[in-house]
Length: 176
Image (cartoon, rainbow, N blue to C red):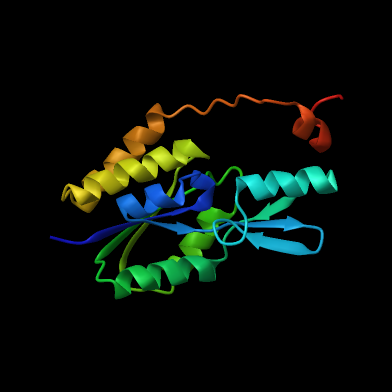
């Protein structure tokens, strides 16, 4: 039986504790404020993010993980005895993450790495990763792991409830 690792990016909104519990490896995105760059899950969390936004009265930009970040995650998984990697990425319609993950895959010729464009974001992606991880923990093969993730993605619908329109107004998406 192959050992399957699940990898996703931090756009999945999975809490670190949940990722650890399910054995999901998280590849962080970066958040840029003026001259400062932060790595999600390392030196910034949502609370700190909004503190900085409120202090600077400016929204940050974000950057997809680099191919090197994915290559590190793949390499670490293989060093830990993984035979197969299933990597789920935030939608390619909103990020270059999927391209980075595919570029990194090229550094591991002959290795079994499947990169999936989730066509989802936030917890839609997170639920896909959780479904894949649960299937892997139950001993499912790669085809079943991928199938469960994709089926979950088809059923995921992302709704947003805003406690304030402040951040939309900052972006220019809403008249203040």
